[in-house]
Structure formats: structure tokens, C-alpha cells
Image 1 (cartoon, rainbow, N blue to C red):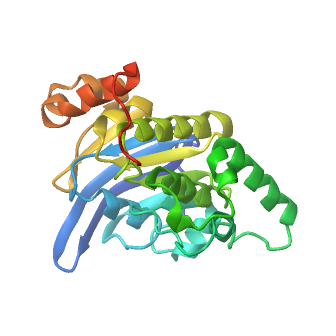
Image 2: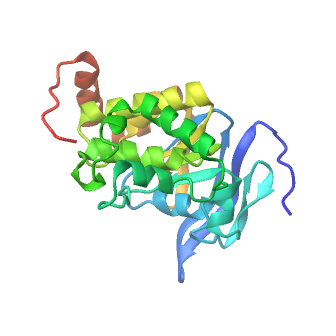
Image 3: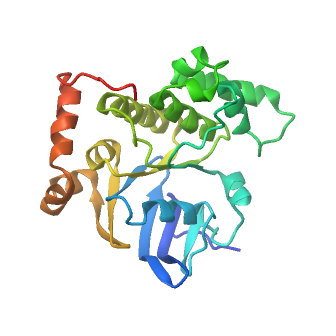
Length: 266
């Protein structure tokens, strides 16, 4: 049984976590935490281990050293379904929707681990989702495969929310989305945190978008935490600017000012 975290405001904590595949080490000595009601960005280029870290938290991979705690309880080594029941949901890269099922059926699948008799709470959660993403209410009888990329990402996040998690892990949610749709999705995540108090760990290559909504951030590179700090500190860091914030800043600024047209389907 895990021990209680020293800071009761910390919902998840990784301490000296090392992880690998076979003989190779992907992540080494990772120290990271998220407080209740906080949005934390995990940023860095493709292939540095962001998804690996997410998979370790949700129990899809087992770390070789260190510990992962959720609400003070050690969860590394637990089966994924038990971790989900504790209150963590992963929205994986690529959405992984059931394309030939309707929007509504995909949402209902997100409640599979909840008590089946409590239909009223399921209906309440559906209404909450439809308030957050009204387009899903309009599309609720449509097959997931005919949705746009942006709508599919809304559905993937909403399916995760149906289980009423305390913490949401989002792995590369902006992949394939236009700048305008990316901004709309980021605004929805802010609403989730502000209105529901959900803690969010956001893995993202789009450093500008992630840091704009996050309270704090970690920069992952070569399997280690290269930098960490408040979003403001990372945004002003010369190292971060040089590595990540060139073209992204210009594109994001154009979207914010309304000068950039959304010419993609998203």
C-alpha cells in the first residue's frame, strides 16, 4: 500500500522514474508532479518519450525504478483498469475511437467501469458533455468515422470525461488539427479545469499552445526532464525559444488576432 504524499495538494507524483523497452532506457530519473486543479504541460519533440511516460502513469508500461503516486497511493504495478477506477483517464494519441459506432455509443463506452445501474448519473454526464461540446449533441446519432478531425478529438476527450475522472492525461491532442481548431480545443480544456476542477497533464509537440493554457511545464528531451518551471518562465527561456518557439509563435499570434483563416477541415 502506498503512503500519503507529503503535499496533500499534489494529485499525481512521479519520483525518479526510469522506464525502457528491452535493454534500452527511454526515460531516466523523471521527477514530475501535478497539483489538484492544475494544468501541466509536458512538451518536447516527437520521439523523446512523452507517450511512454503517459503509458507508464496509466499502467500500460511498468517502470524499472522509482514510483508513481496518485492521491498519495503508489500505483505503479497496478493493472490499468484499477488505475482508471481510481480516477485517471488517458486520451491517447490518435483518438482510438470506434469509427463504425455512433457518437453516443462511443460516449457510453466511457462509462464501462462505473456502476451500471446509475443511469441518472450517466444522463447527467452526457448533458454536461453536450454543454461543453454542443456539436457532439448535434452529431450524437452520426458514426464517429464521418466526424471532422476536430470533432473526433472532442469526442475522444468527452469519452474520457464520461468516467468522471479526477485527472485527465492528454497525449498529443492537437495532432492533425488546424491552428484555429487547436485554439478552440485548448479553450475547452481551460473550461474543464475552471468549471470542474479537473487536473490535466498535457503532452504536446505544440509548445506555444500548451504553455499558453498551462500553469507549469516540463520540457522533455533525450529521456530526461531538461527544463521545468512556470509557463511564463518557460515561454521566456532563451533555450526554449531557440528550440521550439519560432514559427509556432507567428502562427499562433495570427490565429489569436484573427488574421489567419482556418482553411483546413481539422
